[in-house]
Image (cartoon, rainbow, N blue to C red; front, side):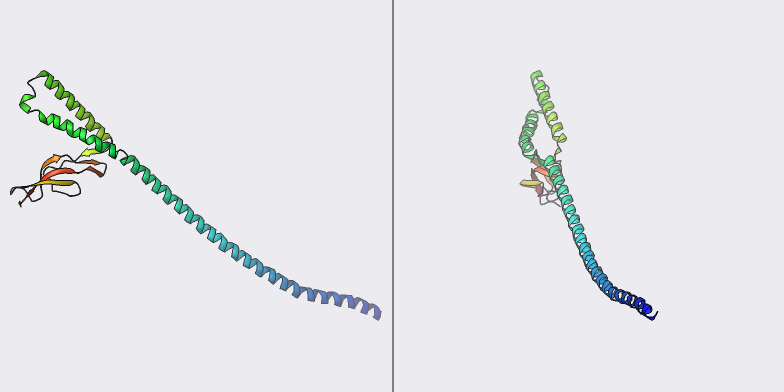
Length: 194
């Protein structure tokens, strides 16, 4: 019976001994795996954060490019006709000169002259409507203060009645296209005034 006890005790002790040996190894292995997983998890989180930042930066750049392109398209649409419109200003000037060349007292003398005058007025009116459709406006400047951004002085006239730098005559009309100057007005200004 004693032998039997020894035989049964011995395997039990070996099992306990094996379990005691395996537990520290398993804990060490588990700690090692856990540390590696933590490092991998940290590395993946950092990589994820970097990718998010890169994405947001790229998205912001794309939005900025989209806005710049939209502004450029709008600007091109607004001002694409500038050179064409500038060439048409001489037509408007000539129509205006034609209307001013006939004295008021002679306008009703001849039926042919009346018809010609009516045709020129209608043409001028149509041209003005087309200009307005495309944002081209004639500047109304008589009596205003001289501004070098919009006016070009051709002559200064002594006038004590008007303030110094007041526009008293317009030799060539100035025009704006939307919010930009298309052509400066050529003007006569007063000097020596108040």
